[in-house]
Length: 264
Image (tube, one colour):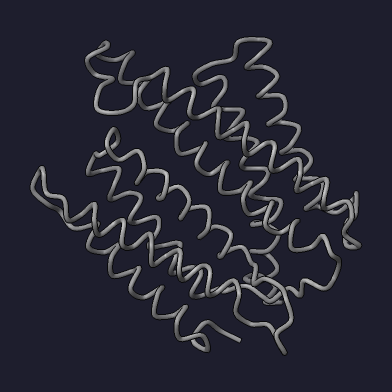
């Protein structure tokens, strides 16, 4: 089954691509329509994600459509949503275009690789495990987004002094926001792993399990290091990027190999 069998999901995805394309267009300073286009694309993107995720069940069976591309698409969608909330401080054309381009690529990837249907009846914990896992990916995606902004702000500050760090959230606020998302993502990830223990498919030696636990350990070390050793700046964001990469390899990487390389 493909998303072409779900007209609403397909229509929402195509309209989202159109809105993101408008957000990519150059505009004179002060014009609001590129921001409106990005917001419209985000809303349509969300509709496409929900309708696609709930499509594919036979006989009304409860479940969720999952795959590497839908999970990546959800992560990017959440990043764009947080940017929309913070656009008052982060309204730089380059940043808006970069997010619109990334979101359009994520929507396209989810259209090409819509994932597969997972029946929720496997265990009573399965839906909760999937939702928590996707939420943790989204929260760490937002944390990485803010971490990149934090690194860029620190670079400008070192190169040209305090005046060059303007045009965004204050540095200390940006750092605090970054690690609030890290902490939130870590709590949700811990719950996802705990619930996963109830799954019959849980295997301690499985590559996905090993990489997930390694990612969890790296992110736990980051939180401990920040509070007990005072890790800040690049030292902290490097740990964030490493932990998030391990989590990406755990599910997205495994599913990419299965769906794209092995065509299963």
